[in-house]
Length: 82
Image (cartoon, rainbow, N blue to C red):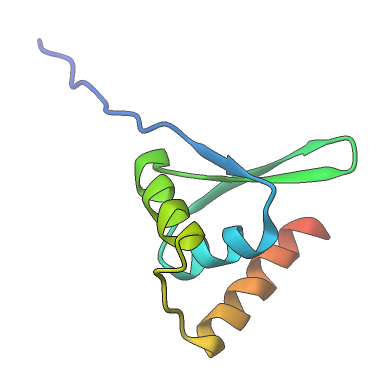
């Protein structure tokens, strides 16, 4: 009997709220949040994909829809007040 190997992708963490909203708006899947004293880290699946978004974010190469970005902000903000 052969066991099926599972592929795991590294997680990506950021405490940058606008970046977290952007990653979520672009299709990033939030895995969890981690708290370090009073700072919240947003943890996303697929580090490689998130790093690509981060580079484009820093270079100002992204365009997002204001309405969907606003919805993303509400979702990400809800993790702060759980």
